Structure formats: C-alpha cells, structure tokens
Length: 421
Ligand code: ASP
Ligand code: MG
Image (cartoon, rainbow, N blue to C red; front, side, top):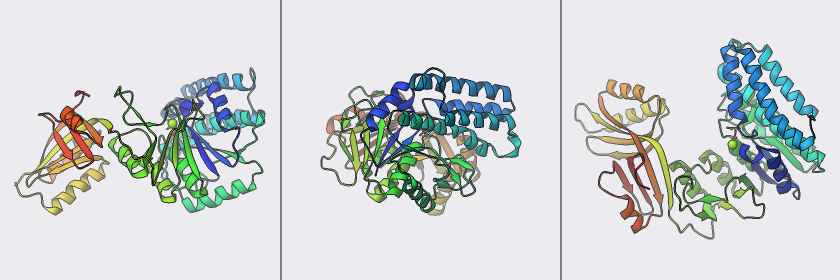
C-alpha cells in the first residue's frame, strides 16, 4: 500500500481535481488523504464564529457561499447544476446542524470540530464521486468511523491501536483498491467528531501510512520538493533531493514550513520514506525524506523564523540561577505554551529566544512574582543555518547580534527583524 496526500491548494479547483485523477489513475493499493478544498477550512471557521455568536442567518449565508464555491467546481466536473447525492446530503446536514444547534449546549471546541470537519467530508466526497464517474473506482472512507481519537476537541490525539484495527477492517471489506479518506478529522470512541489541529492532514496521512505499514507516503504540493530556504524570503533557494528524518525534524523545529515534526515521527518510527512531490509534475522525483540517504545535503540550509522575542531573566537577589529556579522558569513557560527556540545562560542571567505569544505579559508577571527581573525585546527574528560556510559566517555575524549560537553544523543568530538576508 502507498499513501498519497493532497492539500487544499492542490484541489482548490476543477483543474486541480482533474490533475489529482491524472496523478493517481494508474495506481492501485493506494490510500489517498485529502484536505478541504482551497480556503474552505477558514470559511468554516467563519461559519462557526457566526453560529456561536447566535447569528444563524449570517452562518447560513456563509454556508451558501461555501456551497457556491464547491458548486462551481462540481459544475465543471459533473456538468452544470449536477450535485452528487452524497455531497448534497453533507451540505444539508451542515445546514441542519447550524439551524438546530444550540451553541451553549456544547463547548466551543466541540462545535468547532462538528462544523469545521465538513470541509474534508465535502472535498473527499466530490473527488471520490468524480473519480468513480471517470472509471477510477474507489472507496470513500469516513475517517470519523476509522480514525479513533481522544476527546481533546480541536487538538485530538489518535488512538493508534484502535485506528489500525478499524482501518484494516475498512480496507479489507472494500473490493476497490483505491481508498479515499479525509485528513484532519476523526472521532472519539463514542462517535463525536474531532479534528487534529490546523494543518493536520499531513499528520493524518502519516498515521495512515504508519498503521497500515505503507511502503511510502507522498505529499503532493505546490513546490518542486524541499528547498534549502523559503523561496518567498531568499531569492537563491535551491532544491534538495534527499533529507534524513533528523534533518527534516530539525528544519521544521527551526521554523521551516515544510513538514510538521509531528508528521515525521510516525514515519520515522516505522521507517517509511516520505516524498514531497510537485503536483504539477507527476514524474518529477521531488524530495525524499528517510532514515539513511545516499546524497547528503551539501548546500547550507537557511531558515528564518520571525516574530521572536528575547527575554533576559535575572533573579532579584543576584543569586546564581540555581537548579530549582531553572525548573521554575521552565514550568512557567510550559504553563503558557511558550515555545523556546534558543537558550543562553550565565551565572546570573538566562536569555531566551521565544515565539511571540499573547500570553507573554502574563508570563512576565509570573516571573516577577517569583523574584525574577525580566527585560524583553520584541521584533526579533531567528536565522538558523545548517551546514554554514565561512562565507555565510562572514555575511551574517556582525556586531549587534542579540544572540549567537554555533556548533559544528548549526549556526543560529537572533537579530532584529528585517535584518539583511
Ligand atoms: N483543512 C485543514 C486546514 O486547513 C487541515 C489541512 O489542510 O491540513 O487546516
Ligand atoms: Mg493544507
């Protein structure tokens, strides 16, 4: 079995759906995970906001717009005005939930999952129906019946053992050899719909690949593969043919928007190669991410992470930053979900580079309460260079950098946002 994943951008139009068909039509024993079309998830978040505020009419109108967008795609795929019955049923169910639902009867997160999950249900139904109509026989799989999660709504965690059992069963029962399922969604043991966190479809695909013991996972994207820098930021970005899982995790951790570390983990555990492939070119190799690679990355990789804050934390009594005080510092950071990207310590001071967060004022208050003085500096960025060269060292290390850390392979610089690239 292979697993393919298509994101919202690759199925945002009828042309995208036709291209998906072209990519998959010569495959069998294939599990396809698909996201909501285009920006549908954002649009559904808007429906939720209106619904939760009690503006039912506004929510219904917003659904009409979402329906209109999908109708344009269906007109093109099936002929003017044709809406396959399963798709019509989904829109009707969404409308009914919004019309009859009582916002206060459930937690906001629970409503979030109940409504926002329709994006993936609708996209997969449209695509499954289209492929069937074109002779590419496939089985639509309802991931709410196969992807078992806990009840942590909006950020649900997958129960791998229960999921494996149900997925195996669904696949074994199907006479087709192409399966189409939704990314991003699942359900609790008691059948309440859940979602896995925004951008969660890659993770869904990784879990499917891992529990099914797939030979590989391919994520089809609007890129030629993984590059050594974000082409929107650096104009000399270059393509990388192969990466190790560890490279990929480190890059993701430094802020590269390729693949979430959470996605890599299940694949690494089961040693399943991950391909990042261009959906515009079915035969291009893309980038492969795996345990052992033949062609180590020989070009420096640069990652820029913006919206950083540097905090300098000093105990008021000028005591050393003793161990139990260090533990306190990290407990507070963890309590507020502050992501720490770089740490520097001295006898009397600890400096941290963290992602900016709306909780920072509270965090600083807490630090003060425990006897620390905090100086903080917003508007910073973190530049990470893996495999840096002398030339890049010269280029980027100048006076005035706020923090610098350097190991044999990794150079990390915290500097004012907008510094020279
Ligand atoms: N549709 C969801 C989102 O936009 C999940 C995904 O695309 O990965 O966040
Ligand atoms: Mg997406």
